Image (cartoon, rainbow, N blue to C red; front, top):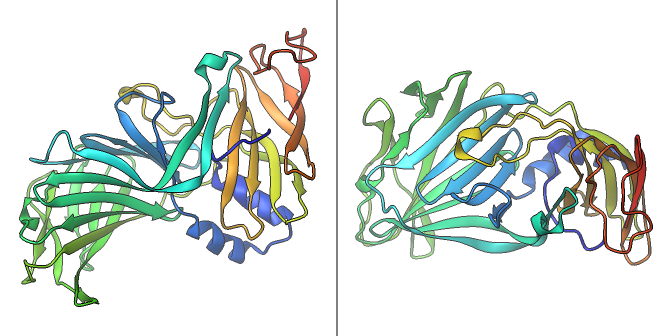
Length: 360
């Protein structure tokens, strides 16, 4: 797969790839956990209401203009959905990606090039400007946690911030001041927020906590602070018991390493597709599955690129090689009559039965 940049790699693919290189699992887990979440701009690969989307270990996040939709995965099955909205907020905030990452996303599904998506940018953070007067909202995190900051400008009122959890069955604050959100199948928790100000180059902690305002609405109670200085409120999503489960339909079938120590991996995956309509948000694996191609940097801390490769039936990569220029060559098997092919290829029509493919 030539010049293919970041799309998506499930945690199992990354773990299998680095373990195949002889890395110890504890070191791998630490490295994997530090990979930043990448927020992918929507360029037609999902529902038009979604502005940015992201995948973490055990969840997918969809950011629209008016809400954040968190789709949870339970050991490869569809889990719960959490919808967080802001009560009384600006309905048309300026939404933008911040700190573009080096990787790009590519979608090569099916044999219709007009439906492929190439070079989709990924960002480290997504900022919502002025969700309330003088208050910005920023999403970011790593593969093990999702964070969102409310940045309150001098003179703005933090009491305006009200979080509405539409799908919550219950809201509780535990004895450690964490917020527990009861859902249909389980629960998620948000750690007690870290609240601070930067004053004269020093981070000054501010005392504060979640405050339940109604059956589905949460705000923040803050003690005294300097209203003439910027304030940051930083909650963190904590996993419940079923979050972080690995999808058992992923398989690594081929791996190679280039001269710089970068790993190239191929195989097949049944990991979740993004939904095409708001009602279809889920994390259940698709069937049939597609092949994947993934490149991981030498120290296992960054996915350089990863892409699905396939059509409307089962596809899987079997072996992979890389040349001196860093171009990967993949061989595998496809049952897809619409497997993506290029103009002028040796064979562009699907033969009867199951076909072998070679992709570069």
